[in-house]
Amino acid sequence: MARIVTTMGGLMAAYLIYLEPPTAITAWFPWHIFFMTIGVYGFMSYSVLNFVFNGKKAYNQTVWFHFVLNALAAACILLGFVAIYTNKETKGKTHWKSWHGTIGFYTFVLIMGMTIGNISFLFPDQMVRAVGPKTVKKIKLVHRIVGTLAYVFVMFEMFLAYYSNWFNRNVTGVLWYLFPTMTLLMAAIVVVQVAPKFFR
Ligand code: HEM
Image (cartoon, rainbow, N blue to C red; front, side, top):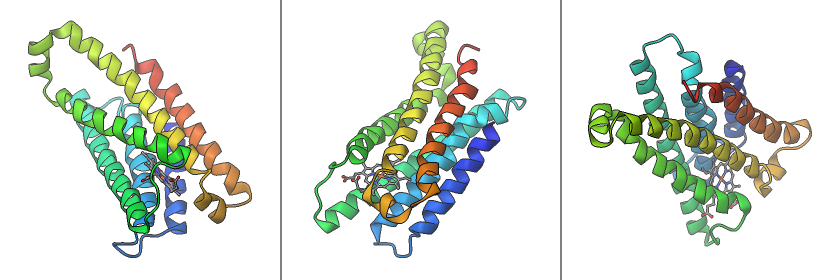
């Protein structure tokens, strides 16, 4: 199942980048699509499923890989956000006009906040010393639940992107249904795969 998610994500990212390839540094819009699809469908999806894939590898190695993938996802989302913001500024367009734009802003803030907060997990000993092992256990549980919810939230944001004028102009027929459906399916599969691991 996890492999299906990463394959679906890879295919969707590739097709969207093919539709709007970034060809010039200052043509901002294609960079929004480029970084968001690679960051979300690629790095973020792989990072959450990393625990499913690497079940037998050393735990510390898996956690480190999870952190690196998430950092790459956050960097892509930051660049994708800067690209769309600059795109609107240079064209003199109003910000946060659509549901995708408004929810996208909160999603961006949530991801950036989580990324900064998650740095504390790189210092487990100091964390235990500061708040005690029981609290650390609780923080880890909260991290797993909020992290999974954030993934669902980001996928919902992708789903909203499929109601933009850009998508409607470029994608028709069966693909028009397939993109939002596969995106929601990816979110559902990830929850089913990851949720049983919450209380381990
Ligand atoms: C396949 C992926 C995506 C596509 C095709 C896409 C497409 C678009 C389009 C066409 C716009 C301009 C129209 C509008 O404001 O709605 C836009 C704006 C925006 N997108 Fe995306 N987007 C994608 C992913 C994301 C993701 C994952 C996020 C957030 C994490 C995001 C955040 C935003 C924000 C914040 C704006 C508004 C910027 C502003 O008003 O200054 N997008 N996107």
